[in-house]
Length: 451
Image 1 (cartoon, one colour):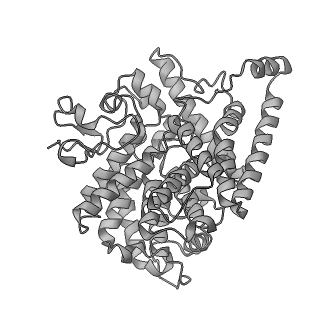
Image 2 (tube, rainbow, N blue to C red):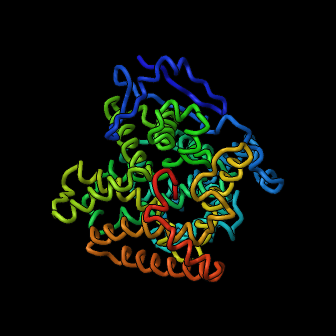
Image 3 (cartoon, one colour):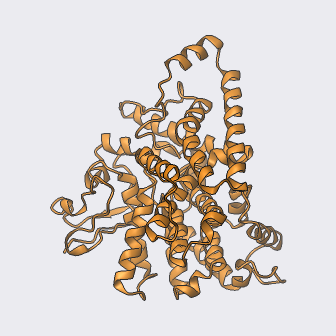
C-alpha cells in the first residue's frame, strides 16, 4: 500500500517518497493515478521552494502577514459568526439586531447585501473580503452550500465543513499578490454564475454542483507564487514528485484530498463514493493546467461543431464543468474594468517577484517575469488574445448565447482596447512597432502560468 504523504505547517513529512515515486506518476493522457491498491496519495503544505523566499517580503508586507495563532482566532470567530447567522448566510432573511454580535452592524449589513447579489457578474470580491474580515472564501462557500442545500443533501457535519473550509482558506498564502484566498473566492463566485447558466443549470445534479464549487474553492490551494518552470529549473521536490507534469495542479489536488481526509468531511459516506469524489475533484483541478489549454479548447470546439453534447450524460456534464472551471479561473479580463485591472496588476506583480527571485539567484528570467521588458499592458493583451478570447468565444457558442456570456465578451473587448491604449501611451512609436513585429503568436505560451 502506498504511503500517505502529509505536509503540515510548512514542514515536509514525506515517508520514503523516493522509493515510492512510481506510485504517483501522472499518466500522459491526464488520467488520475492512485498508486498501488487504488489508494490515493494526499499531501498538506510544502509547495514553497527550498530557497530563501524572504526576499519577496517587503517591510510593509511583513506587517500584513498574520501569525498562525491570529489566523486560528480569526477562523474560530468566523465559524462563530456563521453559527449565529446561518439563516442570514442562506440569504433567506435580513439580519436582526444582535444576530451577528461579533461583527459591526454596518459591515454586517453590507456583507448581507452583497450575498443577496452573489450571482451578479459585477460582484466585488475585494470589497466582500474586507467586509468579512478576510474570510471571503469560507463565508461564500457556506452561503452557496446553503443556497443549493448541499449540507442537507450530503448530510455534512457543520463543524467538519468549517474545519475543511478553514484549512483551505488558511492554506492559501496571503502574501501572494494573486494566487491567494481572494482569488479562490473570486473563481468560486464566477463558477456559481456559470452553474446558473440556463443551458447548464437544469441538467446539474447535486453532486455536479458540489464538485464544481469545491474544485473552484481549492483549485490553487497552497500555491507558492511561482510557476511550474520555476519549480522544474530549481529542482523542487514537487517537480520531481510529479515528473514535471501538471506539477502545481497535482499538488493543489493532492492537498485538497489531504484536507478532506484530515477534516473527515466525507468520512460518513461510503468509501467508494468518497474515492469517486476525490478523483473527480482531481479531474477538475488538473483541467486548469494552462499547458492543456489547446487540448480542452479543441475538444470543446469539436463538440460544438458536431452538436453532440448531451448533458444528460454524466461524462459530458463533467467535461462542461471542466470548461466552466477553466473559464472561471481566467475570467478576470471579462470583469468590469475596475476589477479586471486590479487582478491584472496583481498577477503581474507576482510574475515580477518571480523574475526578481530568478535574478537574485542567477537563474534565467522566465517569460513575462521581467519588469523591465514585460509591461502589464503587453502581458494582458497577449493573454487575452491567445488564451481568454478563444475559450470565451466557444463558451459564448455553448450558452447559445446567454446574457452573461455576451456581457463577458463585451467587457473582454473593452478591456483589451483599454490595455492597447495604455500600451500605446507608454511605448515610444519606434519601440512599439519593433515589439509588435517581433511578437510571436504564442507569446503567452506553455509554462507561463497566466491566471
